[in-house]
Length: 209
Image 1 (cartoon, rainbow, N blue to C red):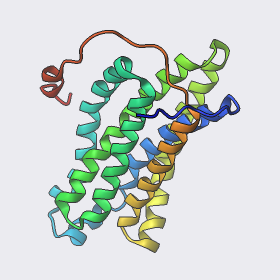
Image 2 (cartoon, rainbow, N blue to C red):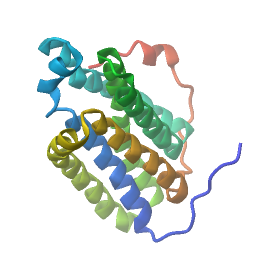
Image 3 (cartoon, one colour):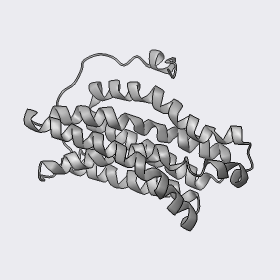
């Protein structure tokens, strides 16, 4: 299988791309919150059931983050970064196209895998950058997390009002797809690996908290 080698770009370009990954992660967590009161009417479910739109994402993020972070140390941080983005993108498409409450919950659960983008992205920055740039790069990524969370709610209202609730998930699907390409093009893989064998049984039995 042919590997995509990053093109030569300004040193800040990979940092910005990784920061945007973090922004997309925080944005997708808050993007669904403003439409939560409308879910019971839109999909004919109870308000208690509708709360799973948020809960499903939080549960999968709690479980997936340490698992993916461990796999990133073993098999490559850029590889697992793009895998997390791919699951986010696929989950967004499932939620947008499903047309039912179970499909929405399944898609939101898949979106929870994107939470691993934050620790894996920061770890990749620390491996790839010289020491004098690490502090500024991590600070930028941390700042964009707050920016993404803040943008999620007003953006959600704007998209819902003009394009319907499915547009929330088409937006994150488009963002995830673009970032997969960007990461593959400009973010170098970390040469560091942690030896060991991944414990599939232990990971599958890991509680969400």
